[in-house]
Amino acid sequence: MYTQGLNTHETQGTSPVDTEREARFQARIDADEKIEPNDWMPAAYRRTLVRQISQHAHSEIVGMLPEGNWITRAPTLRRKAALLAKVQDEGGHGLYLYAAAETLDVTREELVEQLLTGKAKYSSIFNYPTLTWADIGAIGWLVDGAAIMNQIPLCRCSFGPYARAMIRICKEESFHQRQGYEIISTLARGTPEQKAMAQDALDRWWWPSLMMFGPSDKESQHSDTSMRWKIKRFSNDDLRQKFIDATVPQGHALGLVFPDAQLKWNEETKNFDFGPIDWEEFRQVVSGNGPCSRDRMRTRRKAHAEGAWVREAALAHAARRRSREAAAKLAAE
Ligand code: BYC
Image (cartoon, rainbow, N blue to C red; front, side):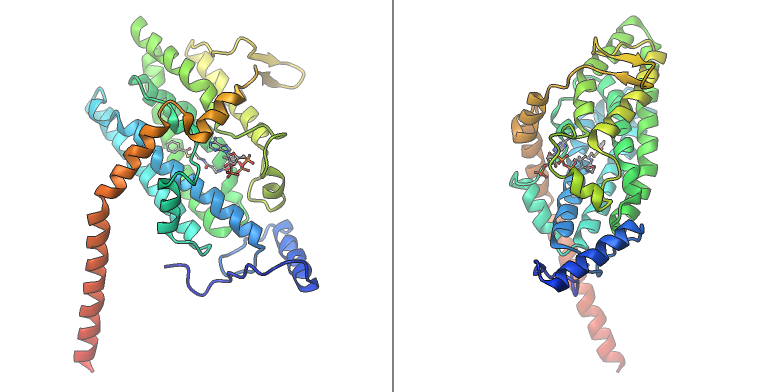
């Protein structure tokens, strides 16, 4: 619905006109102006945004699956209501983000197709299993905590529709993080068995959470350009470090131990030093060989197929309403 009449020219190349347009575009970015869908933009800026925003949307949608697994098994009614609300929020985040991507001359159908055929990526983190109730706490505390660290700067992204979608998303994410930390702290302060569950969840989710920030700055293909265009405001490694520095004291306050023997406060840099990340594991997960990768895609494809009647019914309803409105208009003339 947003895709009509947009500036979609992919023709820019190296002509003096293009060079001048690109310089004007960069000057607007440097002046912290927002770029809006109908403004001229380099084709590569558009492509980068479609890639990032749609991967982000897919992550929200696939991200509903590991937690959805626990809705029917939440330990109390209060926990169930909070988890249900959180998972619904994630569905909503996916929809705002698909709508933001659609302002860039791509349809939701194309984006969903890319997810379902395995062409598009989604966050590595959602390819790990949720084995116990403590994992729901760990997801909220660590995964949503990492998400907030990465997403707050996106509220200042140069592309207006993405930045505006992120403001609302971040407000909701902060509730998600708090509900997770509350679950983990209840378990960590509970019986020895409950504390062991919290520790086990931290052991399994810590390293995958650090991988959410993407490859190291040396290996990141897109960071330089995305930072020049103010799509990204901080590098992957900088955000990862900020997350570690904020999260480690929270775990220590609960008497939990991080699964990293090299994790240590560095008085000189005022940061936590940490051990090496297993980038081979990250590469495997991102290329579809994570512990739950196939299961996630199978579940998503099944949900999409089973929802076909809802999409068809909504389209039929919209068509009927349009024709009824047209008939009423004609009768009134
Ligand atoms: N997993 O050059 P780089 C959530 C890919 S939703 C998979 O550094 P970039 C939540 C990257 O796409 C969390 N792939 O890329 C939801 C690129 O591949 P392509 C999602 C990854 O874009 C429900 C290649 O590696 N958050 O939190 O500059 C419940 C090279 O990387 C990952 C977002 O999407 C990964 N972890 O930086 C609870 C935030 N990392 O496209 C929570 C928005 C990297 O060349 N996205 N790749 O094939 C971003 O901020 C950036 O896209 C990233 C990567 C920091 C993720």
